[in-house]
Length: 449
Image (cartoon, rainbow, N blue to C red; front, side, top):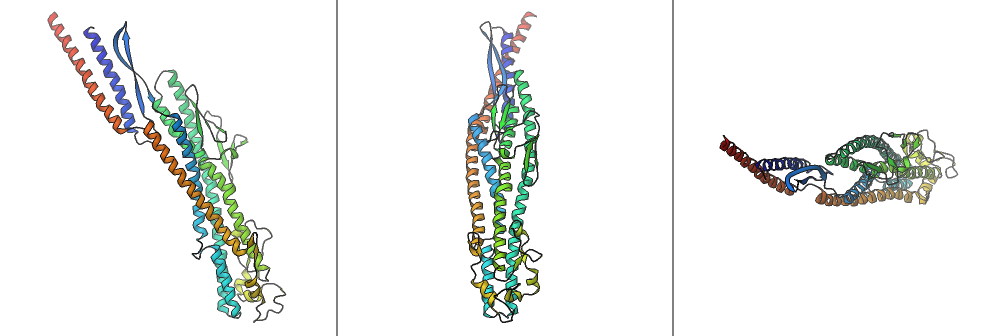
């Protein structure tokens, strides 16, 4: 082998080491980047006529476990769904009150009933009459507050869905752009590792929003599908739109709301269309039963702001109040608000209305008012507790899978630093070969001259 050949081989080694160094630097810089998979340089030994002629570096490749990556994305989507649900219900739970702490519906209803029992011992006691009205107002305001919390949570869920759809469209457009770039570079024989890492990060974002999974295509591109089978457009096929409250999602002229069942968007839709309206319906029914139960005794204690008890429950919890007539004349809690066989004269000492209130079972759907009040709080608490448990479990699984994926596909700083030292030594050795070859050239030229 000639001196020139040795020099060329050593220079090829230096070039290959520089390419490897660039990959190591990229890995170290992205060691803490979520979803980043370590990259590796590809080296190929070269020869000419059976003799070694050096080394060439090829396109860097991702060191990724596709199966593990798919599991991580699925777990991220589930965590996002459960977390979104738990956070929404937690906000309502805080307003609902805690049984036994005096701020829940059952306790407040009990306070009102106790107030009437006390009033029965001295119906003419104006202080106790006002105390009964005050207890009723506290109960009505709590119902209003819970209704407002549910309404706000519903609006927030709808807004978050719209925001999520905007983020989804942006991410899908970026995936489409990266798909095109990856296809182009692949056809040119160039590295696509960096672009694929960028795309993987976007796919994880999309999975968080929708629970989508990716399917690799032969040309290097990927296709994305929701768990229900809806393909997500990445090639300029249009964008999703979310309008209304609750949201309706469309793609072009097609309504696709029902295809979003996972991720934060799926959770938001479920909250806005099913879970929260269900809580509101239960609260409305309780409010109407409360007003109707008292009205049946001859005392319209609870009403809408105009003093009437609506014939339908829908929306009543948001406006229920103590009858303005009773607020203006607290003695009506003794005498009643309408003609009643229990109180034909309205005499000051009459106890018929009060007795009816105290002894009435005050029925509601599924049992008494007390049972209904307990059920409203208990049902919501159970939903919130179950959601929190599911969120905690999903977060644990997501973390475990992410850590496992990182250990197999992520960047190991120790490994990269070890490789860096190896490259440093190899570079020094190749540089030494170049230096010696140059000295030999110089000696040869000196001999000739």
